[in-house]
Image (cartoon, rainbow, N blue to C red; front, side):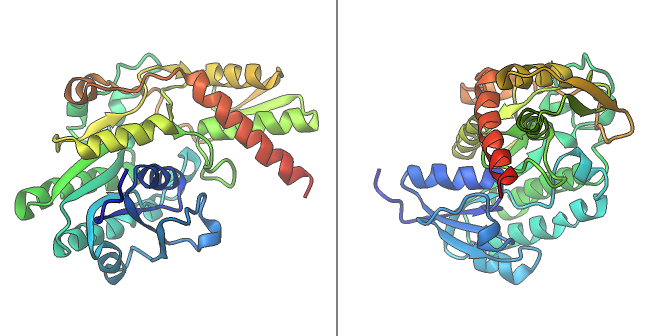
Length: 328
């Protein structure tokens, strides 16, 4: 494919989803500017064919620099992590409002044509997620608002901000509400990891060290749907290129318990561990699943890969990272 002369900006490019997205855009022949606050040696993936910039997007002038000369912006930059992080860092999560507001202003000022916003399933009312056999969440159920405190409120506010920038300034926006994205080249330790990566790490470490126990946050009966990174990137591209400006769920509709997820990883690893349930650890909502009716009807596509497909690849990658760390 011939290279497009128009620059496409990815913020949060040093992060998990951002790194994969930059790789996809480059593979499509796009000209990509990749921006993150972290130093380049801390990026999960560093693509040499991109224009890689280290900028603090909490500052208005950095956002203007990042957006200059760009046509489309994929805005993924955010201070976030798994449930252990967002439940104990509510103020830090909400400070991302600076990043979102300044990036939207920069997109307007620099004449960008289209703005993708990475939102989250945490915007949905907690009252709709208080039992394990939860009904899948539809996009129109986000109001009356009762999102996850801190992180969810900030994301819901930014969704509204995108809407009003579209109405007031004509900035075309697209929004995806990601549901528990997992995969290789992401966080698997340090406190920001999500359940699939955390369980992969714990089970890999147990296998490598001969440990016989597995610590699980909660009672293991919590339910979630998990989306593999390849489908998250495919959905992101389809949403961005589509003509629907209202938010889409971007997640799997395959509901599983945390125990079932652990069963699958243990099967892949070839171990069976004694489970210890930490009921005092952060657990989030009781159940959450994506309703994919809207994305299927609007884009003639929805995630369909079986959970095992992504978990096998994720476990193998995390196993290798853990094994390498043990011999350092």
